[in-house]
Image 1 (tube, rainbow, N blue to C red):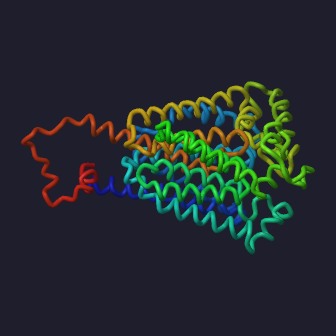
Image 2 (cartoon, helix red, strand yellow):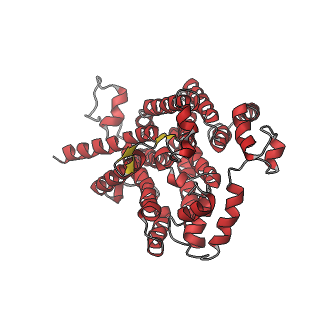
Image 3 (tube, rainbow, N blue to C red):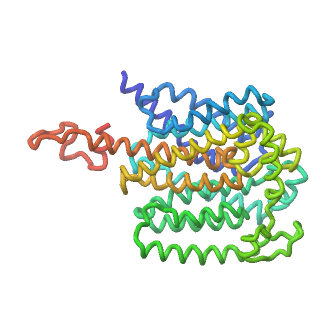
Length: 434
């Protein structure tokens, strides 16, 4: 009876995790209203409720995800609700939206315990990426272009959410580059597809991060590989930078620039920051009003809206945490980032090349840290942080299984495990041993 219940719970956990890449794909479209909610809001609320129901069935004893490092962050910002405006749109929604991330990581940590099991998700991430590519082509180049061009006249996120969708491409890039030693041709092909779609989406930071994945890959260790990759990345980066699409994003004529520029211009700050450079000093100045406790979780949204309409996010998560939570909130965020990074590096050392999830999580986590400098990953859970936390959880689950296997006492020479016989396929043995 217990085995039946355990199997039922496991099936529910797997279904939950299977939804992660599907939600990632569906969230590249925005503006689909379902009652008072957008479909993306319905996605994360459903994920949150399902997670709250599933986690207690397992208990924290089987959890290997490093959730304790995030406890100060969620405790502090949860408390900050009481000195916020308690508005559903800006405050309450923001906090509960962020709660989904560790829940996904926790469920992944006790559900995924082998590389093969994690690789079974490859086809879903391929399908999700191709769907994003089709949407990008339709809205950026095809019949949907008229909808995309009128976004500012209707709703900020109606049509194809190209910047948010580009974050999903980073996730796919991490997953397949981490498997470069196993499926090199597929890994390179998927990275090229992600990079191409990212350029087409005009997302500057996502395109840069996709390039950097090759340089921060923890398993491309030989000097020859590093030199070759660095040269190739620089060449591809220069070619991408000089495409009309990227040139227009950096030096848009509508922003009073010439439409063309150089890397030197970028280094000097002579490019279109889309209002970031003008808004960030205002956020820092206003944060000084309540330096230690901040204004409360989500309070940055109405403030940004008042000074940078129609934007309601600062496009810098460190400044957002500073404004909402003061020095204590920002410190709690940094603790969460750093503790998880240490956990991932521990997984890399402990499991070695036997855990490509750790490599994917490593690249994904550095991507998160970088994207937080000039984008909004904390409110891009469906597209970015759900799968990133999924990878961190999977990395810990696989390492825990490897360590448990290593600690198991060896069988005596004449001892026979009666679960296996000569007809048992070798690939089934790890499954039967659970």
